[in-house]
Length: 250
Image (cartoon, rainbow, N blue to C red; front, side, top):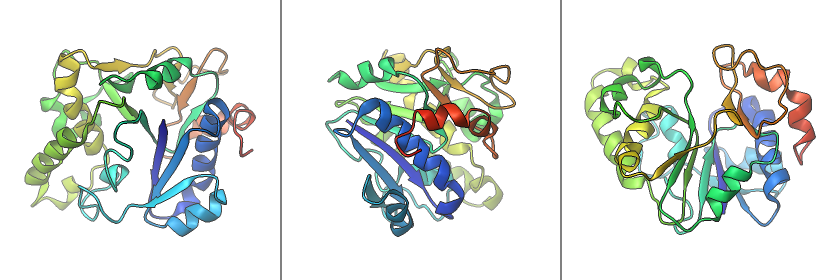
């Protein structure tokens, strides 16, 4: 089983979030699982974790990381460990209770994919990809994407990337839109959803928390994982005591 994260640019800016994101999943899944952080500055990540995680460089991969922002999440490869259950996580995703549904997903040897449910699937969250996403599909959030051992999103995501490149090649402003990668993931999952191979984590235990989503939450009893979205990550600061209590790196 593999948990993976990607950071780029100023590692220090995201260091605290990343450290506790990794720390909370280590708390619940133990040290026998592989924890991998991909970065364009591997040395900074190694200094942050002192050998507690595997570190990979993002300087190669299927995507031209010079032209996309969040596309860098999928470098150096969409699949780091083919044949194993693999979970991609944003650095503002934290385990705050027993994530037994996630554990059950990872224990299977199937070909299913996994995602958070997006509570407010506005077209702007998927950008140019909005029209490519099946209307009947539950809206996914790309902050957590799981692949069972026989599942591999590589070809689907590369196809979406190549389509996107054709759309934005002459539009630098469009090329920099952050959420296009999330739209690409949603579109890439479309055919698998139609085939019954996409699972969504229960929204009452796996929730996006921000001023726009689940803003009413004032405690995390019964929650398993939160995605503390928004630029300033207010939910991380609001629930920092709970997050640190669940982090091996507190």
